[in-house]
Image (cartoon, rainbow, N blue to C red; front, top):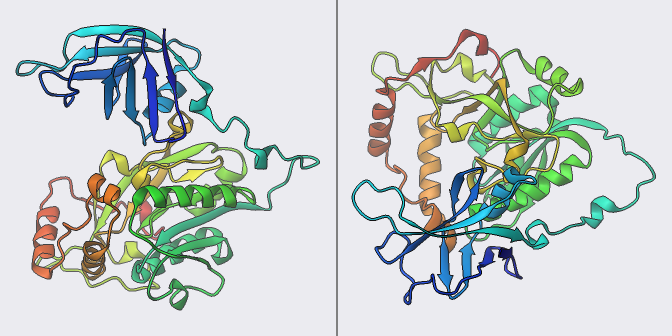
Length: 386
């Protein structure tokens, strides 16, 4: 039986197998002729393990995204086995021949810490949380867009229940936000999306100590319930939603720049739905798990959580992405992101310096986007709700 475990570096996972004759003499890339591919099999489905290298009898897995834990969540008490295959050969071959399969036992280090002593501390009874819903975001130098984020979510929860993590802005968001909106300043190092996901995960848990639900979106994202704010709050109050919730709909709101129908720049203080007319279905990953009554551990970009088995979709919720809702704000954002200094690991995963940063290039991007055949009018049921 194979034995899986972690050591001090939580980014790495290891699986020791019962054979030492399967590793190539010179470890090769997975897709080369001499390479190996590795997967964990559950219920007949093989889940690929990326970033894995077999040496002697031990498979080392660069597992920053906790691939193994995510498979174990699905497994419950069912058996999981390790499958080793030769690299695929020949055009169109999707996987190579099976070389070895072995049932796998998992050490409890995959689930550490076994006890969270902050949660385990005696309280003398259940604590009644005073707040129903808090909304928070994180931003750096995005004051123009933050005004729209604040105005929208303040209609939902009031300014005192809004929290903005100011991640190193040169001009504090405090200069443009309502005095009752909470601004939490953080120093900024190199841009690192994994670090952002971690500090937002900690902050979400902090807010959950006093609120029944916590909403996190990017500064250019709005959560909208198609029946209005009161309907969403009622659903939260009466137990109609729980766990981790992702919206059933996700759309990009677009600034129409086409001749004859060109829209003006967005005006703060006005409903965006009164200033824009078009939207475009966003990619599936933009149905983000944004609302939760339990701790959520986001992956980079906040598109997924490790606790994927706790995620449910709510059809009446819409996540509206405002990145392309205003030409000037997007041009400014692209220039800032192009100039950011990323950590080495972050740049390797998601380089951010290729955004259209001059007006002509961005106009070309808008022209292509506005020619998309899936473009659709903002539905009437959302008018006046954002």
